[in-house]
Amino acid sequence: MNSKTRTAWTFLAPMLLVLALVAVWPLGRTIWFSFTDANINDIDAAKFVGLENYFGEYGLFANPNHTDGFWNSDWGLSILNTLKFSLVSVTLETALGLAVALLLNQEFKGRAWVRAAVLVPWAIPTIVSAKMWGWMLHDQFGVINQWLFDAGLLASKLAWTADPSYALWTVVAVDVWKTTPFMALLILAALQTLPKDCYEAARVDGVHPLRVFWKVTLPLIRPALMVAVIFRLLDALRVFDLIYVLTSNNNSTISMSGFVRREMVDNGYMGYGSAASTALFLIIGLCTVAAIRLGRMKLSED
Image 1 (cartoon, one colour):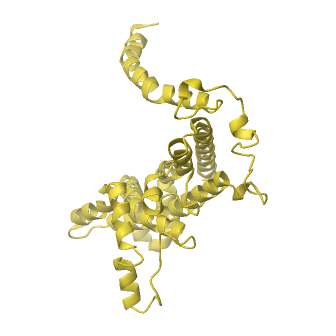
Image 2 (image 1 turned 120 degrees about the vertical axis):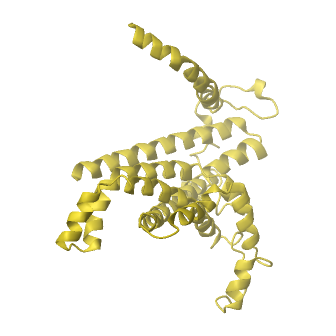
Image 3 (image 1 turned 135 degrees about the vertical axis):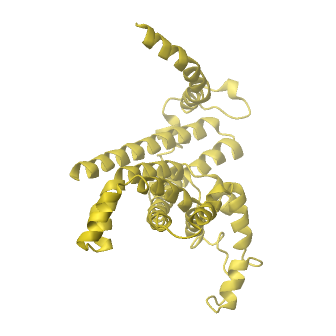
């Protein structure tokens, strides 16, 4: 081992040690608990049960409470809710973020102030923004219901966060409001690195702006766009705080992280909850790999 390699490992060792303590060890312990019947009241008395928490009579994928399919079990519903939330919110945030980034990339007076203002929703802590929107969407005293009722758009006030028909999509709308600035910021950074000569040549040749966007801008920012989508997808798949504050433990909106929290904290089933947490980790990993492969396929086609 040469001196440069030794020096590199010397600098990396403290970071790797900290990473092992704060990430690898808790993850390994969670995976171990998923193979036991650990209870929060007496963790030391946990016994090894193998795959019982996953495929046993009352395991995650056994579906003992519903006879009409896995997707109607509590765990199945949490997976569906999380996937719906992630796909819809990330799609909307990407489209709106791209539109906002294109607007902010233009030259106009006061652009710096507008850029700062756009970031305000993203800068507000999630708990604070969720509580704020919870008050605004209150079925009796919320200003949203009042405005819509006064405008004649509603015949009666709606329980946006309690009615199963609206709750999940209400959470999606709040998440889009909060996280679109994050996507816009990442896409704007990519737009600012694009070469100007391509656009000058297109302007001289009289190419339509839409054609320039599809043929020049979008292909050039696609790598950065894929990175932004993957980052946002990872965050959306592990959503907990926004849904929990707005809708609590409502089965129509509960996410996989919310299911893990309910089983481990409310019910005290550390083994069962750890199995759900491990399954969540694997699902996020698979989705990430799939998104990366899809992005590489798109880039190779170009």
